[in-house]
Length: 145
Image (cartoon, rainbow, N blue to C red; front, side, top):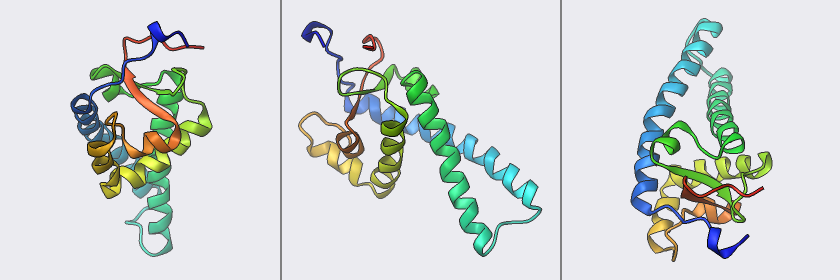
């Protein structure tokens, strides 16, 4: 990649704002998915069905994020905040990398370790981005092929 077209990393405040907005949007997606599951099951999930319910919700969230990152590099919240997820070379994520990033983010952000990591990281990147080989850049940067 040409150094003159090197993507500009998004700042920590913008990424945290996008993350907060993402939580609001994800709540709506998960709420609808949970409603459909309970409606089809005919009851509140209990016992073994509850574990399937949790896995189902994890997969619904994953499908939303992975599809958006592979297709355009942006979820709705990331579009609103002008950021995009890319591979380190500036290209869009492939399915495998996007899935890995999602699973790592669930653990990293869910535990808080990924947010704490960003405070000490030299580029203020989240732990799951470091581990998956991705980063969040300003959306105005062109995606390389």
